[in-house]
Length: 106
Ligand code: FES
Image (cartoon, rainbow, N blue to C red; front, side, top):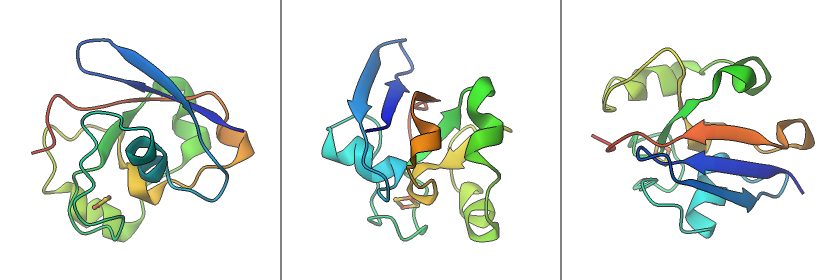
């Protein structure tokens, strides 16, 4: 089971189990990770599932898709490493993934 660590703005870490096929956002919501609001339920229409991918994981996680790119315009404090967690599918190669949760979602 791929493990994913969510790091809060204050440095608090929470490591949870993900299931392949779920999105990183679904894993966060299922495990009550604070700061991932996911208002649209994963439809790439709200940008409240914004996370920052830690440097060592950026290549494996991959690039934003065009719809995600547009939606990130509405997110708070977007950086190069920003992704929408509903657009990242969990798989075994992401075991150990570390993402940071923004200070706020917008
Ligand atoms: Fe709405 Fe990801 S949950 S954009």
